[in-house]
Length: 170
Image (cartoon, rainbow, N blue to C red; front, side, top):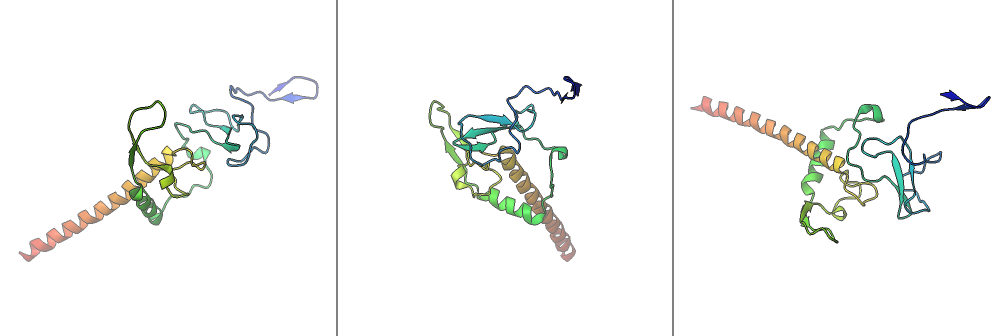
């Protein structure tokens, strides 16, 4: 805090980004007027998070490379139960993979999925349905691995019990 003029208090922060959003800040998905306009709703992070951008007359969160996953940045944390994990497993296993090339100057072949093939509420797709949510997609994969590991452990137990049963019968 720094006192400048008589009776006026100014608060200073280090911030190298664009202007902060108006209060209340625009909601992701709400309409905007100026294509390319952006505003910061938080100080930028090392990944460039904290900025809204007007794209196709809609406020959106630009694609970022590294989501924040610390509990200190989150509200309403609810861990998934077995049914949730099973639903993720089913969704992951139903994901159709494709080889494709991007239009334009990139001649290389890529492996991935097509956003339009994913259900509307897929955690693997950003709400704008313009970009893949890599963090969501990876989390779906982790859930699938957890479900499969649980099944593997159950099958191993069953095999051990069958072997014991068979060895007693000899």
